[in-house]
Length: 225
Ligand SMILES: [Zn+2]
Image (cartoon, rainbow, N blue to C red; front, side, top):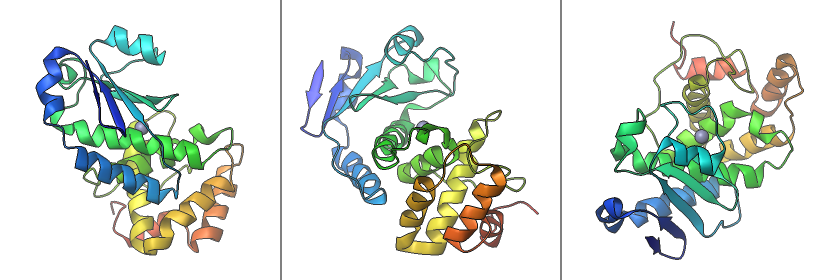
């Protein structure tokens, strides 16, 4: 079945018909605009949302071989989001179906990130990509992290930290810099690349934001004492 409201097109099965009928399009639209404004982007339309009904189907559409239970959705080419259907999400992932909107807005943020940060290695900056997506989705922000950030690119061995620490970092920047925070973030991402050493990245951060990244988080109470 297909539901098309112009901006979003959803492909789903009968078992999710009621869910789709009750969908809060306004909420989706609001999140979409938050992402668009954050990245000062161009419209991305239509956004296609394909409900997934099994891990095999997820693999088929995304090519993602290392599917783990925390993976619930994926933003791919042609503005298509593959997301476990509300009717099966609790069976195949650790996510609750009430988190559907968080997940969808998170993925929409990735489209705008990709549009704004066009350098070839944009995807490596997971700390920022996931952090901004969590901020856009307006998920409850983590209170603090256990230690100073050791990287400004990504936590390769502990992917969940990209979401948690990334969200905290973005939140601290937006609190500190208000309406210029997003511009500084985009500038940082455009003027760096993943071949840089951590030292160079922290130096660049300080140049753009006027203070050390960890001090910024500490000042906002984001690092456990
Ligand atoms: Zn993500």
